[in-house]
Length: 254
Image (cartoon, rainbow, N blue to C red):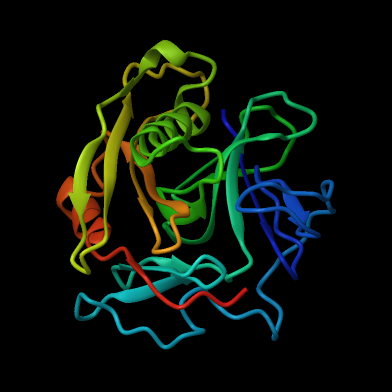
């Protein structure tokens, strides 16, 4: 199954199917350190939770605000989602890639049911965790436009998380104009996988929604939701769109 790797700026990240990294540099899913040892982790006392830095109030009553302070991006999620530290990055890589080169990633994410499915598909005695869903944001310095950034993010997250190695099982829709509640305009695109038939216990189809936009300085950024599809507790599309509608710009703090 695809490996979702995560790392934090000040903590060694745990294990079961998740590769740990210490962030020594890099940007939004571009690690510059090798794998670390496994061990239980929580953020260090000096590492704030995503959303805790600027006191941003949620646009949806009862929800929680997630803030990527480095990029100046915020969005809201239901209270049941877990907010990761602001230095945390999640990414997907090609199966079997010894370098773990990210296909796509995002920073300061929120995660729903991080241990939604557990399996030991390779029989090495280590249980691997598959989350039900996650969402985060990143910069897009290489994107030609917001439409390209939205489609590529959605496609790569679904391929990397669920469909590997079958690219033909991923369908990506056309990018469409979208404006959030705050008036932030850009392009939104969705991707889904169909017919994933991996042998692993946690082999499921997936879906992703990506929104790409520019800040007043003309820099392109993206927000992406990725989650399991076709299961009883799948995140409803209505909820995905409600989260998407809260994406907004806030003051960045490099």
